[in-house]
Amino acid sequence: MAFVFEKPSLFQRIAPLFQGFDGPLAFAVFLLGCAGLLTMYSSGYDHGARFVDHGRNMLIAGTILFLVAQIPPQRLMSLAVPLYVLGVTLLVAVAVFGVTKKGARRWLNLGVTIQPSEILKIAMPLMLAWWFQKREGLLRPLDFAVALVLLAVPVGLIVKQPDLGTGILVLSAGLSVIFFAGLSWKLILPPLLIGLCGMAAIVWFEPELCADGFRWPVLHDYQQQRICTLLDPSRDPLGKGFHIIQGMIAIGSGGTWGKGFMQGTQTHLEFIPERTTDFIFAAFSEEYGLVGNLLLIAGFIFLLVRGLMIALYASTLFTRLLAGSVSLIFFTYAFVNMGMVSGILPVVGVPLPFISYGGTAMVTLGLGIGILMSIAKSKRLVQS
Image 1 (cartoon, helix red, strand yellow):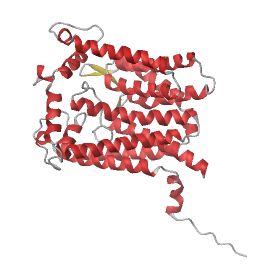
Image 2: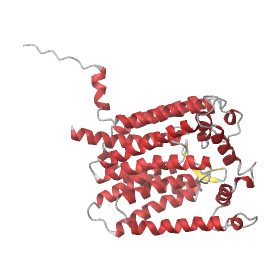
Image 3: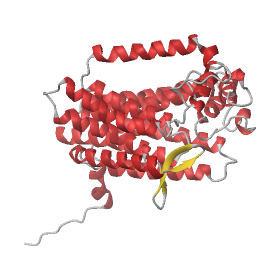
Image 4: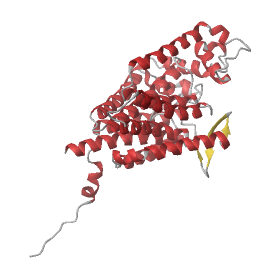
């Protein structure tokens, strides 16, 4: 008797690679990516090949997303400690012999120039999720103290560069893991209250803070200038306050429905600084107005909620903590970027996810979505 084996088609061979992918999450990322391409085409039309480069960065991020989604969470857990150690080691190397640009030492030349702080955006939640997984059911106050030390070391090195924007992102990613791990509100509220009191003091003593020649010892000059500019951009409308003023003008001029695709005057007349990177939200707001902003915010909220749903139904403590933290990273990105462009937060170098131009940030975002996909895929394959 002869047996005939039919050769599987190409689709049949690659279909298992997509099995278990989270469709709603992928759809949200796709829509945000499309919004990013449209906005980049308009805002970067006179920036040479920025639109093409943005599309290339998206393809690279998508490839990384797909590859990381194939890695089981157990393998990701085994990479936590090596990746954290590598990231901290590179940060120390940056502090010793890093490349300085515009007064900041953030880069390392290893044949190609890299920014090691980007590694910690993912390495930090991986490391802390690994730490708490190893102590599941036996958590003590000392374990939370060690976690805070593990978080403080890289954040301190990043802030010293100085890079406040990346420091905020790494700090928020680590604190979210610690919070989800079960840190008591009794320990969370005191530092929050102290921080709020500090902000109130800054506002109360604002004239002294911004007086000529006065310097706060805990702040760099540029950080103090950013706070003063936030409190009153009109102090220096053609200098430090120019970014915020033009951003708010662009957002307001969009009105309810926006001026339309390629019709943003503030954008195309080049009044918006950094309109393809940190301030691209202003360009988006001008062309798509309040309605476009609400849809964009809804997209980010849906991405956050979907990520938290993946965390809720994850099968292990490690995957729950990691998925929850990665989801909040996207929220922090979007909240800080929109807040600084709108004039309610100081200007820091934080891009708008999937919208702003930037290869390193796009790769980090693709890696984060890939981790969420890996966790969702693992859970669905176990259930099936």
